[in-house]
Length: 372
Ligand SMILES: [Zn+2]
Image (cartoon, rainbow, N blue to C red):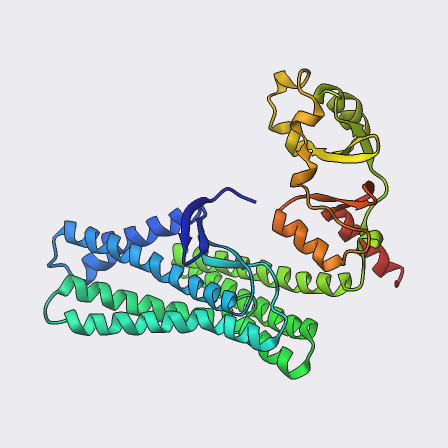
């Protein structure tokens, strides 16, 4: 995971800001304060242009946040867990840990966002009308926010997965066919279609001399395309994992090390020599923890000789332990929830295998090739 700033909790949902979001914030503030408002309202002072630009930019940020919060609150009401909301360069995403299990649930969760944007647009349209005769700057602010929220609602309703409209489309096809995989495929393909259309329009704008606008559309298109493909693969993977157990997916080929070995010895004898990156730490056969490159990198190099594996490892209490007959989808969820690369499979207090993200994929591929 990339590092993002924690803004705090709003209505019980953790809100994060990705550094890339600052780019869009600066861009909107500069466009509004330096160009849009001066062109529309030349009679204002330059200070007023910038002040209204900045306030509008903040309120736009609040609008995007409200859109994502609405998705999250509806999801929570439906019994889903929401990990967090992250605002980044293309807007926001609410990280809902599980895929919805019913079409109706997905439909309500998806449509809630654009509806909230429409309501915010209506609110600022009324604001605009109210201040139209009394304050030109406040009216201008309302006008812009009404417009941008309406655009937000419309763009999100474009029927391409993973946009909200794509999720609505998926829910409808899913409801009609009862087949989530097929529904995701349809929604993902329209998503890719929309993405190519945006890239095409972007290229045309670049050739027409509108370089920044064009580049922007190409970026959004590229992002949408990769998200649409990823969303489909995710569902495919869930489908393939269904019915598989930890035992089918784990690797028994792992190495055990003792906790009192120094990091120096671990690196020299086990990592550099044998190209392994993760080790199970045991004490008389019992699981004590796991140690990997990530744990080692946290210790300064000069201290490797004087630090034991036990001091640097991730201890058992912090590990998510998997039983041999745990379901494949639960494992995938644990791997992504905890954001770890590997999990130990434990039976009768003994480690019988480890699950690694990359390994699961490889095993699935082998099974598909063999037709199992
Ligand atoms: Zn949305």
